[in-house]
Length: 215
Image (cartoon, rainbow, N blue to C red; front, side):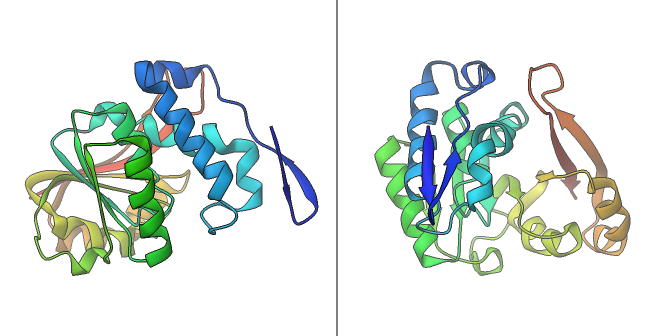
């Protein structure tokens, strides 16, 4: 499939085989979500033109890989285009997700996708993380491509119940971000802070996450 954006033709990445492993009998829902990103991504500023050639591997699969790590009630801070929350909700219908997004246009799109995809385990809230009234509301909180760890922790940790966990998707600089965030880590009394790679046994690039227990 190709898109034409500002007169330039851009190839959209075809769905990789690993998607069937991750989404199982809900693969059709994942494909519908991908189609919506292709349809609306550039128009609504959800994705840049350079992201379409890696739409599945870099965004949808990258998000869904952490699905086995989640349970209970999960908050997705700065959900934006629904990443990682929507792929995770598709892969894990047994987990309850709340997508937290402050921008009205993106929040409206998330609400539309929840309805169109028939996702009964997802709610979208228009708010900044620090505006969520029900603090300590989640068993786990995740986020992807939102901010450096030192800024992200004050937004995410207060939303996690005692004994809950942060599971934050990060890139190759994850270890360096942990080193720079030591003061914040101590302030929030995080335990067992570590970097894990998920999906190393699958035919795709693994996802790197920063995990820690909230004490």
